[in-house]
Image 1: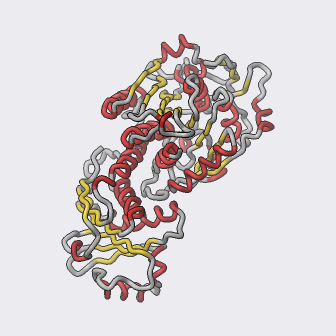
Image 2: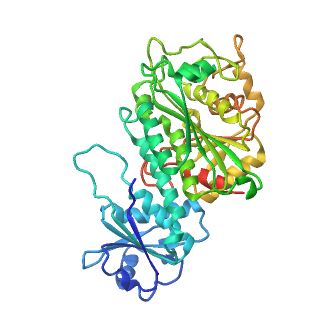
Length: 484
């Protein structure tokens, strides 16, 4: 993935911007515009015409076209806003310029933290998601960053932007381009580039191991390319010497490359976009690669459950009784609840080494969409302090999460007359809670967070990201892992 070239400059004189065609100026909230602001009189005239006061510039960025043909956008930063609100305003400001597909973009900010957010916003929104058109927009080639930052400060911002871009790029790929086989090939290349370890459990091996829940879903495909892929990142500084709490973390991601629903076939409206059902695995993968680039002092085992949920003569069906890897028998109720099936065996593998924390990511249930829409994602935590950490990571990263209960009385709905547990119910009521309770059975009572990625796609963008695909969970996960 290529990013624009970044050149750093001190933010000392606005005159340095005079030769750049597209400029975004971010100034602190104030009662007057800087005396040397480019086209200051024109700005004042525009504000008067729109009947806007200066504080409104903290909520509504504006852009003007100068007589020499250059476009300049202006936004005031407000330190009282939440991180999510700040990122949202930065995205709106940046897009006033990027909508013209410039080759060069100048960013001006005098605060270091705001400069990082501004650069991140520009990097994720200048990244073109894969399309197959004869004619595509011109990619941004260069960013001139005028700020207190120097090149050494940029590495974490670039790593996080690359990770978000990777998650969105993989999720956007058409299902005939990203199959389990090609996905695994791409992962191998990325692992080699980042110096990570990799182990792949193919379908034949998983059958021998007794991973019946994963194999039940994968057996519907005519290709034996499904696998549970295990990546390992070990920091150069041993985690146990530098951290108090999180020393070893397991990340788990649902990687269903296309979800037909199986025998309980989805209607056309519901099946459209189901190539995005591997988003959880893309998020887990991206977090792991970002951690490696940032050299976060935490050991990570990343487990990716990669398969198709196809319909065929060999596909699993309602009323099948499946034996999972840990010996639990599962009564199949609905073949479109395949995500919790592949995650069950993957969680069993992920907990065998007794990590300090297990976090799974999945576009798992429609009921989470109903509960919170697409602007938050829902989380479940095995303990209240862990839920607090997860919410705090959402506030800090600007990727908001909402806690749901793991109330044991809900689990009555999963009681089966013929197996240890039902996969789901046909009622649909509180399915996001039932799915989490089902998954918890396979976590070996480890500290655990389940992230139901209802915000993976949000029409019109979310936070810093302008595309419908948001990459939600990458910044949240990196922030969570960076906490001690």
